[in-house]
Image 1: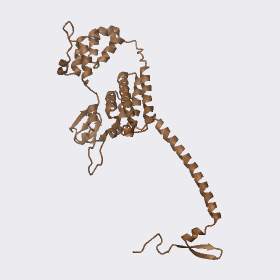
Image 2 (image 1 turned 90 degrees about the vertical axis):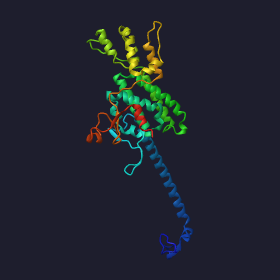
Image 3 (image 1 turned 180 degrees about the horizontal axis):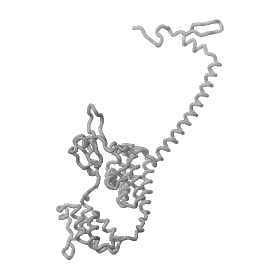
Length: 357
């Protein structure tokens, strides 16, 4: 079988113009007849082109580096997805390929607007806490960066509103402890990105903690009726709506006039029965010298042993019929056509467990 090159009709010879006329030469003869002057000239041109190329490359690399650093440092204008519902697929089909991971759901759902809504704020904070506790390495690089951006917005909201300071301080403390352990294993592909990037983020967490420690809550300037001016029955009725025992302790420290009411045994009994079951309470009974149950001490002891009951005004919902994950007040295609579709509310832990496959 004949060999077919780029020009299968030519034996590899070329025609070149000389002083004596046109002459047929091969490629080897042509290379041997190159003059020394042309060789030197070509060498000088090549060196000149290389210098220009290196200079242009250095300029391009410097410009790209400045642009990249500017994008990495410009966390004030991050991009947030604003999708109100997403499809959670756990396998590959002919119509869909791949899986929906926790990081993808965290990126695509509208958490940016959720932290501005008082009904969803506690839900998002609890979700950030669970991710910081054990799920941060499972997020993609984009999701980890988005996590830090959302956390920055949460801290800024708390600084502006001067509310929910304690849960955010606990969240930052847990995240910092988790990162201290994860940064030590950077060579084992635990976190995505450069170690200097995560050290910079840890410095930001320390700065946020310092800002929260230095926050000074301003007293309202209204001259109307305050909590201490209400009758005792109304004061107890308001205190019964508090679900965190630490809020009761803080209330007694801020208002010495309400200190005796915050020690009410029935008040602490309601809180214990709200968070814990009767079986859990029976295992941690504490009796005083007078033969009465110490409900306040039992509450803090039970809090160290068992998780608290969680209730949220607005949560994420999952439709088992069409596998759509959506916010409670958002209509997805299934509920629009079939209002009686099978949907269930997801707690923050349920949202994490949804992607454990």
